[in-house]
Length: 169
Figure 1 (cartoon, rainbow, N blue to C red):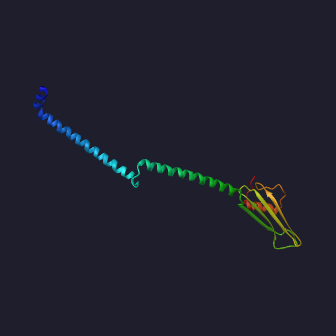
Figure 2: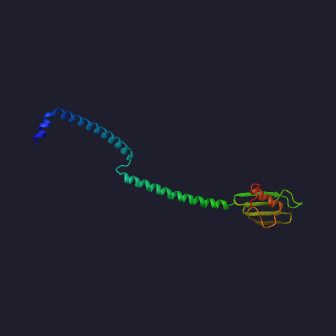
Figure 3: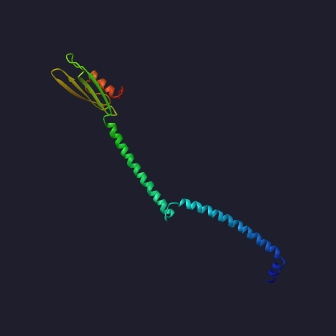
C-alpha cells in the first residue's frame, strides 16, 4: 500500500491532468448523449401527438383495427360492384328502333321493330305490323345478336342499330 501512496505523491500532477482529461471526455460523451436523447424525445412527442394519454401500443392497435375495417368495407364495395356490373350486363342496354310502312294502303310508318338487347346482344326483337283492319305483334328471342326465328329486314336492322352496327357471334 505504501508503494501506491508513493506513486500517487510522485505523479500527483500527471494523475490530476489525466483525471481532468477523462472528465472532459466524459462530459463530451454526456453532451452527445443529451443531444441524442433530446432529438429522440422530439421524435417521440411528434409520434405521440394527439394521443391524449394513449400509449403507442393502443395507437397501433386502433390503427390496425381501422385498416381492417377498411379492408372489410373494400371487400363489400367490390362485391356490390361485381353484383351491379353483372346486373347491368344482363339489363337492357341496347335499343334499336325501326319504323316502317308494312302495307301499301297505310301511311305514316305506323309499323315498327324494336330490338331490346343486353350487353351480350341477348334479348328480344318486337315487331308490330299496323294495317287498316288489323294489327299484329310478334316477339322473337335474340341470342348474341342472332335469332333462331326468321327475321324481317326491319327486325335485322333494329338489331344492328341496337348493337351499334356490330354483330356479336
